[in-house]
Image (cartoon, rainbow, N blue to C red; front, side, top):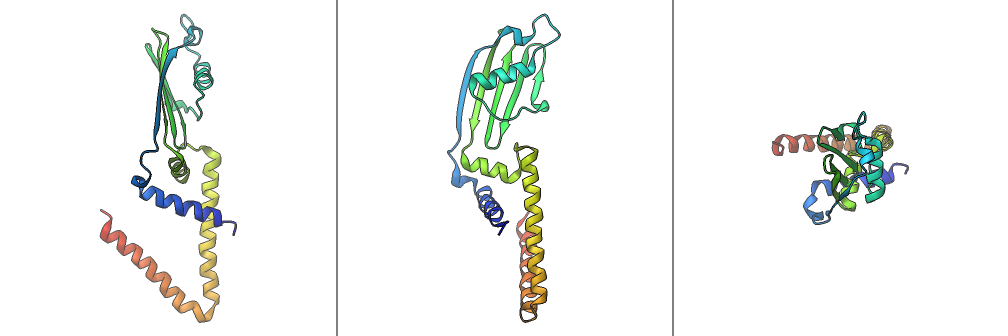
Length: 179
């Protein structure tokens, strides 16, 4: 019963991932622009205060999500970074000469959040552990079922035949229908 919620979650999100067209139209996009504090741009100093810029944009525009090092780019004319979370992204581009920013924020809806959690996309290390623990629990549940089947003499043969048939059908479907 510990894995009940996990099985339900991954079953439902497996279905929603397989049929994204059922949930189309939930995307909300917002664009914004404005001035940037010149002190954060680092004119005449060793460089821009990227952490200050990220936190300033987070507070000013009410953004959330993580900014990974690979999503932060700084050059002579522009600074850009992206906030990412399940079902969410916000891309910021700062023009260093003009001292202004442009923001594009995309909220993909509740189903997209669930789908990204299913895949572990932009969800952090803690959620990655939840996925790993879930995989171990589901494996244990499957193996326990087979072990119990092995000790129930009356059901052993039919159970193993059904398990083998299910495996064979899955392999056959893969061979026939997956390019």
